[in-house]
Every structure is written in C-alpha cells, then in structure tokens.
Length: 263
Length: 218
Image (tube, rainbow over the protein chains, first blue to last red):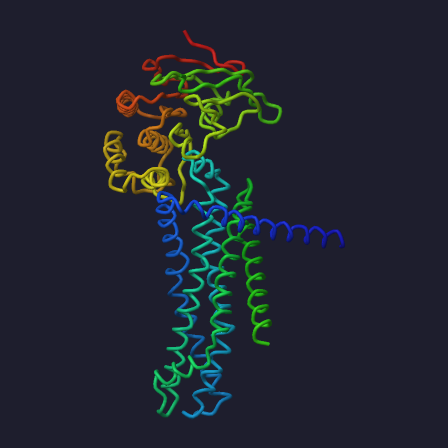
C-alpha cells in the first residue's frame, strides 16, 4: 500500500512539474510574439481558440445561468421576506452565492468539460498519429502554434464566461423578482444594490480565479494530450486523467482563494 | 558549393542498421532519384536531409550550413519534405496547411500567398481539395498536397517521398510536367525516392540504397 501511495505521489509530482515546465516554456516563447509574422499566425490561432472555448460555450452557459438565477432567487425568497426594503439582502445573497462561489465554479466546469477535453483529444490524436512531425517539417514551433493560443485564450475565455454567467444570472434573478414581487424594485435598483455589495477585493479574487484557473486548465490539457503514446486508448485515458486533475485543481484553487480572502 | 551534402552518415533504429557511412552530394538545380524497396531507409534518407531525423553520426549540410546549427527560419528556406503519408496537420484545412507556414516564416500577405498557391493547385488539378481537411484526402491526394506545399514554399531543396505512387498515367505525367517546369523556373534541387514502376528518366542521376549506402544505377 505504501508503495502505491509512493507511485501516485510521484506521478502527481511529475504532472505538477510538467505543468510548471509548460508554464516556463510559454513565458519563454512570448518574446517570439514581438515578430510581426509570428504575431499574425498567433492571432489567427488565438481567435480560433477563443471562439471554440469561449463563444461556443455561450448557449450552455446561458441555460445553466438562467436555471441558477431562478434557483437562487427562489431560495432567497425562502429565507428573506418578500419586501422592497430587503433589496440589499437579496443582492447580498446573490453576491455570496453566485458571484463569489457558484459562478466561477460552474464556468470552470463548463470550460473543462467542453474545451479542455477537446484540446486534450486534439493534441492526443496529433501525438498518436505523429502529426507533430508535420509541424517539424514546416519548421513551425509547437509552442507558438499550440501552447501560446491555449495559454492566453483559456484565461480570457474563463473571465468572459464569469462575466457573461453573472450577467445572465442577474437578469434571470431579476425576472424572478418581477414575477414574485409586488412592485417597487426596478432593474436599476437591483443592479445598484448588487454593485454596492461588490468590492474591489471580490473583483480581484474573481479575476485571479479566471487567470490562474484558466492557465492551469489549459496547460493541463496540453500536458496530458502531449503524453499520449502509441495506443488509441491512451487518448481516452489522457482526457479522463486531464479532467480529473483539472477538476481537482480548480476546486482547490476556488475553495482556497475563497477561504483565504472571505473567511 | 553543393546544395546538399550528406557526409559519413550512420543511422540505426535499436539493433537495425539503416545506413553506415552513407555519402551523397546534390548540386544546385540537380534532380536525383533514389530507388527504394520495402523498409530500406528511403523515407529516413529524406528525413535526415530535412533535419527531421538526427543521424547517429555524420553531418547534414545544406548550402554550406550544417542542418543542426540552423534556426527554424533558415531551415524553412533550406528544405521542404513531401511525405509519402500524412505530413498535414488535421486541425487545419489543406489550404491552411500550406498558407500558415508562409504566414509564419515570411512577410507575404494573405493575397500574395493565395496568388502563389492557386495557380499551382490549378495546374495539379487539386484546386477543389484546398478547402477540405486532410482526413478527406486519399493517399495520392495527400502526396499531391504535400508536393504542392513544397513547390509553393520554393526552398533550396525539395524532398519528395514516393510522390508518384498510386497515380494514374495522366496524373503522373501532369504532376511531373508541373514539377519540372517549376524546378527549372526557380532552380531548386530535388531529391525524390521512387519505387517499382515509377519514372526516373527525368532525373540527372538515379541511385539505389544497397547495404546501407547509396549506389549509382547505370
């Protein structure tokens, strides 16, 4: 049993070191973006990645955000009386539940489920069919073609997803207020109350969650995809391992940051 | 100065020796065909020349510069390999497999790149395949797309791996006519592996791999 724990610890350690290595490689490759030719190919691939990981997730983000908005405001009415004078409490409840905790968490899970798996599968298949040889044949750097677009697009996607998710949630929760409330609360009042609850620290924490979480998820996708070997099942195993690692790491990051800052 | 110089190359995979003391010199604008059999190292020879496979010992020199010392920009201008199978990235369309490396390495505009790709694609009758993805091509079309990419790049040395295989008579004649016209116009050297039934009469020299070395064919 001890040896099994040792093997697992060693494996986790090598994943962590590998991801740190990819982070170093990404930072080391960034100066290449100073060359206009490299920048224009990067820009094309970055936009493609941003479209796939951010924009195409909009529909699922909308549906989940709407459901959450309805759920949160129903729960708010269950614990806070239905009265316009309690608008600050509605806003506080929404801010703590959605903005601080569930919004970032669900956006991260959507990014992992949709885009991170796709990147792992893409890179894994390329590794399986030796397509990196094709990249070498045209003398293009894999770090610039694969690493940098993911490295930059994932955090930006996650940040946009946080913002979009919260916006839909706000609108849906207001729709619930309109439906149940007997009048007196306007959308402007509600948004004003929400903004009063929002502090600079909360914005900074959300941005940190997006930046660090997005980078971590993206780099882990590439790491596991790149470690696919000769068997077809290696690809499915890479996706499974990658998702497990990403979910664990993202939960730890979320809970850790919330614990450090809010508790 | 020789366009390509393979100097005392040795290469082996595990216990299997592919080349021992292999030497080859290709002059500027020269066309050399290498007749190959099954698993005798034809593809490895081209990969060595392209700098995609490091030799166990010996030197690969293109235009006086050692391949291993070249930066990626210099390698791009030096060689381009047309693969027998694969060689195209599945995440890009066939067109982008050709255009993206040019965007990456040169100052050419997208319009200028299109103006270079389209006439050659028309001449090779693969215009309608450009917007497809690599998985939608058959083996012959994949080889033609690899050839098209090499001709569009115009490196100093074009390396073609069994490009004639599987082609109909008409297709092969057309492909060779286009290749030879382009080669004469731009002056690049060509090192091409061939197999049984392929044409080699257009080459300046024809060699064969024998016992891990290259021997001339009379």
